[in-house]
Length: 383
View 1 (spheres, rainbow, N blue to C red):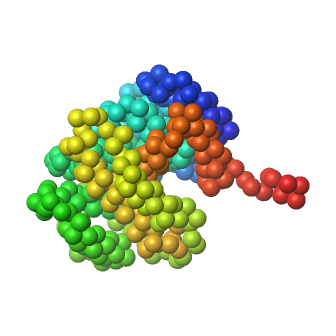
View 2 (cartoon, rainbow, N blue to C red):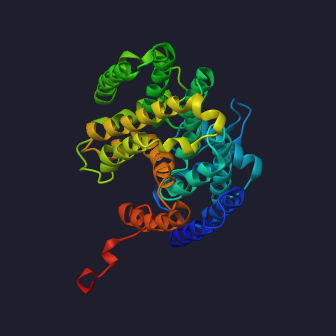
View 3 (cartoon, rainbow, N blue to C red):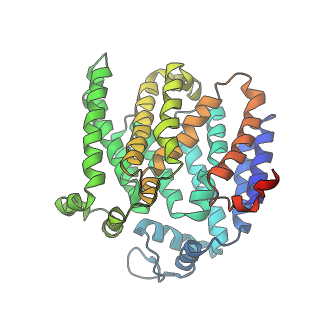
């Protein structure tokens, strides 16, 4: 991961001279090349690779299958098998191609509401934690996260049908996004059916916060009972078997507090309030989008962060559950919220690349397992 970090430093310095398409393509192809040459990560890598390598073509729908026992949703297994059969590239080649596919899809959907400068900075911030996590260590989360972003954008644009469609597609790739996509769907209905009728939206928003809090407590604290109650509906989902198989995670014993939960509980909500107070979000949008969808964007972003905060409070002693369920909220904060703050600092054109380089050093320490960084290699007695 040293090579990956050095590549990030170089890309951030290029920001001093260019923040348009050139930087986007440099980032895309340099990261995809590094993903191709990175070594295996261990057991998870072995299962992902085994599933990919065992792909075969069959006459039984959906035709593209694999014989390896990877515990993954059907859409992901079809996706990887399709790429393997059609291209016959090795697994590390799949990781590179998957990154190019996902980053291209993200660019396509984000440009529907955001300006190019903002999107480029979004992608740069994604290099810090998002890219190594979902494109290297957990590729199953990559394409599912992309389609969750699709759903988010379409809900912001009040296109409920497309939002629901891409929510189901995302769930078909990874069931961990079910809670947040369910909340966004309910919020979409509430926004179009109730909030739109109020000029002063403060009271109905407070009411919705209360309702969502109750729903989250019930859904996340009593998932097994709820699954039994809604088994008929859940069985129609493409990843129903996976959902049932993951319920055992809610029965594990306490694992200890996840330090990065403080980001979701304190730091991200604080940055959101600051950005909202100073109208920092205004610089993100196309001019024709600002007046039309600004409120919706702030509403859905705010509730995404609120969701992550509640999840991390509910599962403060269960780091694995908190990290998985709040992944969309955390990534949205890393990809959109943090860039919003830094895009509005004074002298941003000069300071931003250097601030990002400092952040590289910080995330290496905060996420040591992600960067294979061991603090024990430092002789603290000599410092």
